[in-house]
Image (cartoon, rainbow, N blue to C red; front, top):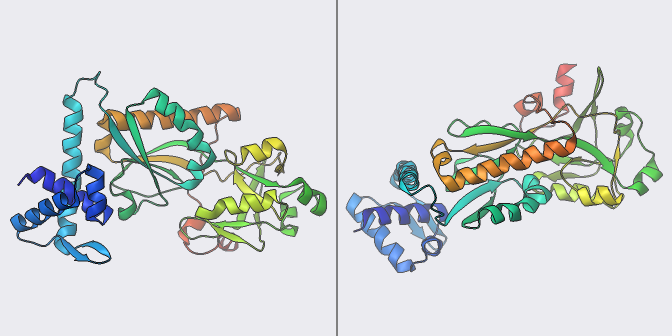
Length: 332
């Protein structure tokens, strides 16, 4: 039995929860994967998977073995990369976990440039919401908006998001343009539920020494993965949205969305973080993507005129699955 190959097949099957998908990853037959995984179980004297019509599920022994194998395979990959000549352009894949809010309209336009610089690198981009064990398994690097708390990853802040308040010209004409943040209490404002489950119904503004927190509301709360719905409804004239300054650029450039309260800024500026395991930073293709992501966010700050400084972790994050406005009541 080829023990290394068997372990690689086992890890792939565990990550994919399927022998057939593991086989596709290595471009081999399902029978080849099944044969080596079975031989591995026989040599270990334990069952690694429970098999059913629904797919594969790790046994307790399988979960323990997977936890030990993943870092070992990562170290082997690093060792392979280190001994290759520095000029070698070995094809390889970088698995990138990214939140939709970062990928949509911001990262996506930059990716062709990365491909032009590194045509030998294949990017496997996966949906990502929060750094759970299941979502981080098998990925090399993550782009995360917010304040994640992860112990086993390097966390590098590469930028920050700036909030702006927008609506369609027809809505402002019909309902009036606010002259002060408190005016928003009289408007239909759409809310978003963050990845932690908190309804983001507290919008904070600052102008000079003045700071105002406004509890807003409307007839729609959209989950984080459906935040485009909020901007689309605002574009159609149905209400007010709070969006990130790197999104909906075409609608804002065309005048379909008009910013309100431009002399007020949001002091709540969630950071954009790169997360990765310490071992992968030494792999050239992963390092190439990390360096590229850092440069893309640096360019964003250049277009703003001045960098947006990330704000500290907000108080409302201590109350997941609640409402951000609950922290306002607590402060009072």
